[in-house]
Length: 309
Ligand code: CP
Image (cartoon, rainbow, N blue to C red):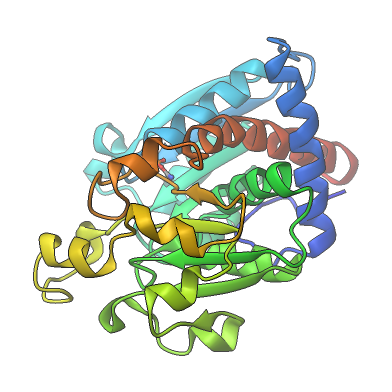
């Protein structure tokens, strides 16, 4: 049983809650692979996806997750909503609440926006990415993918490479993975490494080789140009040359290592096309697992709401 009505991040989630979501994700994935839907799970519920930033994977998978489990589902895009007329986030949330909805999956450029919304609505709020803070459902699907491949998380070495400073995916993975006993190694240009990240449990590496040596999982991150004010690295081609993961580097990783990326990928910048499309890549499986993860989370939040609200 989850301990609250919302999922705002993995910093505040317990290992037990994370494992419960991963276990339920396995059930949802089995359902998906059988080609099944379970429309009774969220029958009578309504889900709103409220996105103030672009998305393909997260928004679509939340919407499909709601539909496959029988919820009514509506998207509110900030670009075409009353946000453009000056409506505040809290007023938007309360307006949706007045329509008796059950879940809001929100993506917002400002860290903390989902928490503010959660404190002001009756609906369960799911953080679908807030600024540079957290993207908990992405980390959950990443952990599920690792658990599927290796049978568990404890003891895995996970190398997270690239624009860590601007990455909510890196932070949620760090919180979730360390809670389940993995070791997280990070490598980035100095300008793209957050200060004091080691205090949160990361091993900060001084070379790509150090990060990848013996790693079970190699996770590339997208360069988040939209969050940078410029000047953090000379050019994309130089970034790719010195900080992109190249084919030969996989030889340093552990036997059976997997290549991951949350997407969208800048081909040839963070990872070479042959790594993205190669045998070790699980990037496509991450997408399928994202749908199962969001189905699992919605079903668990419904159970919480039925027992507690
Ligand atoms: N990984 C991820 O959040 O992708 P989208 O931006 O397409 O949702």
